[in-house]
Length: 107
Image (cartoon, rainbow, N blue to C red; front, top):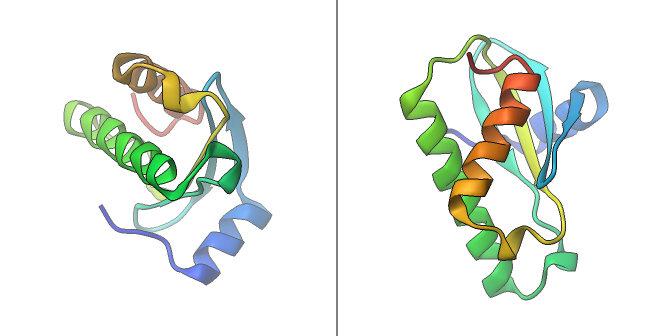
């Protein structure tokens, strides 16, 4: 899973299309390759909690991508909403799948 650089991050934030769900905001910008970025702000808690959230999002994304095919390639930034730390992993996977489907990233 390749990560976004600083310039790519800024480009996605400025020009990307936002899709909202219960636990996530997904920002998508079409591109030649697929890259991911994660933004977990300090409002989620300590560094330990933020890193746990980041690891869970990466695992959910890998889980979704290994079972599905990508319809589009592009740069994707995932921004978790507050309350995500208490959500179950299955709920995270389902919600991330729904928002990715809404963004037409997965089929």
